[in-house]
Length: 279
Image (cartoon, rainbow, N blue to C red):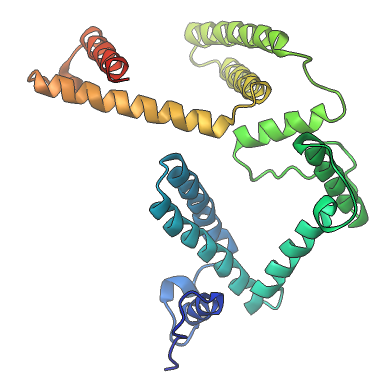
């Protein structure tokens, strides 16, 4: 068996590892049986684990998670190479070409005033690229991937619509729209409660909840707050306080699940007060 290159810092070592893993004659059975569709969920998961390490400010974990994410790129590239479509070098060349092409203010003679102007220039360049590649979709919303998490896709749709002027002028009407959507959700909840078997009412409720979440994403966009980051903070806060509730109840000799909601609420408030006292 051929020995692996000794310099593990060299990208070619990683490429050789993946080639060996995918070898039908002596590779790893699990790796050999994978395809693009089966690996895609792992790619998404690794991207989220990178974001989690960044949120936790854990640079050691970030190094490891970036390696895991890089492995996903290598995995996809290897499968494509086996099919004769493209190889890892082609992936590198494609992204290098794209970065140079989309940054003429760095690599050519163009100028941009600020980051906002650069963002507008970037979107315009992407539009021209879609046109030159023969894409027939000329909508301002063209090219927004359907595989994105829906909250992220909502923000991208809103941003793209804003490029042609379709946007709230300031936050007040967005807040008003939020209150409107809350009332519409409340009305559909009532309809479902009155007739749980009414499939049309349940469908309307799902539709209105979607509208509510879409407006919430719009509020975050106007506030220049990343929706994913905000949700991660909310999730972490809930988890932290809930675990504190459990610990407080346990210290008092109670199982949280055995307590009525009123008692659980008291522990929740104690957990919140404990956080405030610790700040």
